[in-house]
Image (cartoon, rainbow, N blue to C red; front, side, top):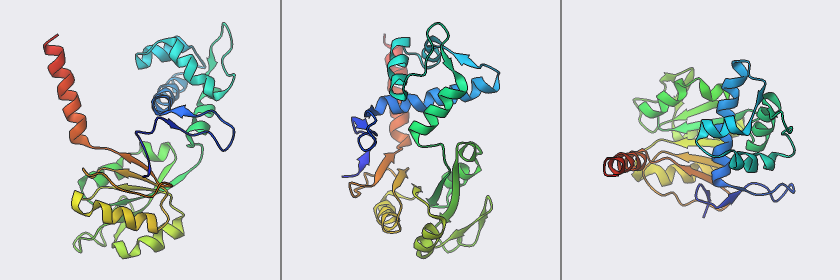
Length: 225
């Protein structure tokens, strides 16, 4: 079974760093988004209370999370924003450029490639693949759609480690297997199917229908409270 988003703890171990809960890792990303916006607004120091209010959690939880980063906070002052951003990006592994590919050149893939935020966060799309002969050869955001047969060559040349699967459910497992064989280390799966991958492959699944169901439940619940 691959390393998936349901794992209770992630990271740490090999470098002597403490293991993080999946919830803490998710909050790290949210902290980072707010901090990057605040630094642009000229906020050079932030408090655990400000971060807690932004995420809707208590400041004790914020301090517990950020303690994984080392002794960064200053009593009576708070956290220096740039220092905290640097520490978070390092812990999340996004203080470098990650080469990624997408399989499935449909509307979802095209929308993802148009999103400028990925490049700003260090994610660079280096390959786009589709089995549809009518799509092969098209240029999407400067990248030519290639057939799956080119996957191994392009992934190896670009040293890509991440992949997004945006294909129908009935072909997703075959695509994932091909990506693993080509050297991909982590997969973001948008196909509505559970992928079975080797233990060393990291997997994050995004099922939009499930997310909408959860949203509908919350709205339904609020109406009956």
